[in-house]
Image 1 (cartoon, rainbow, N blue to C red):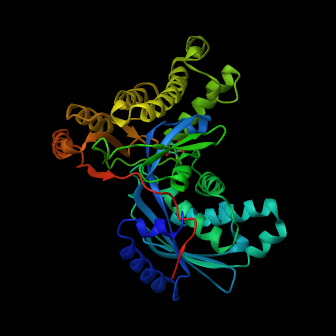
Image 2: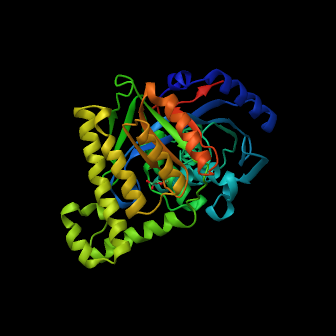
Image 3: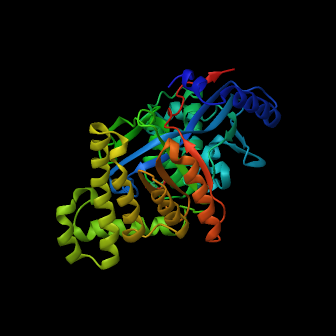
Length: 407
Ligand code: GAF
């Protein structure tokens, strides 16, 4: 996690030049440094993070880049490739209610970092709040595809400000800061998975995170050795976690835990399912059953990856999809089709990934079969009258750059 990570990132020198040029144009000064953080794909473990369960995501080779320079006033001035507008706010006025739109992501992180610094040392934090900055974001993580473009922005901003303000927070603490920004400034009641993947990812590995203890372990994926690839099928069906289904699913899980007298669903296992079925209404039972069986599938995936390699995990990916489709009910016809066509075309396994209600599916596919799978997907989507999906391979990649590249 130094700037060697930065150097290793694909196309980095182009991005660096583009970023520095955009920064100067928008802020009239040169950046002090450049930082980056990736999006993620979740291999397995969906809607388990806010239930204190297990997840197994990996960071991908699509990143958000942040250029930052100090200012001699106490303004936060942020710009991005998402918008023409440059947003300016006095650091003293930062508060969740004062933020909205795309700038709530970077400014929410600035607010959450100052808040965290303030709980440790109020005087130091109010001193920091006088050190204004200009920041520009450039991202190649597709938005709305379920690949955590938001966590990428939050984590890239967090590492940049962590270094600029000399805060010295650890990667895990910066992940928590990103989650606070997402929950309070953006208003999406999401868990800790995406920011953890973005901060702790490693090339060729997934992050096995216990969301109760927050202990994590890097698990080798061994895709190259097995001649396998992970194809993302972005259905282009959009989702928004700040509203609707995501929050409703979370509420169902909390209701189930409360009814069963446990702090979180993590306290229950498949042995508890018969009792749960007696105590919960049908819908709440199925929501909880998804979470409990999904936790077991994550643990089993980790065991199989370690003992047998990625060819062994296909049926767990498939079962995870079925559970999300039938028990958790967060799939859409486009995602089901992507999974169905992938399996019929020889994928080892396939499932929707991320929060659901749209976004992307992943297929674990022998490299040699990918061209045929891509053709089959395009054809099947057209035949059903669905928009053409975006198809691309993702590489498990290194997480955020803790130390910036100074220019
Ligand atoms: C979204 C959320 F941001 C994550 O915290 C997680 O809950 C995921 O949906 C579902 O597994 O990505």
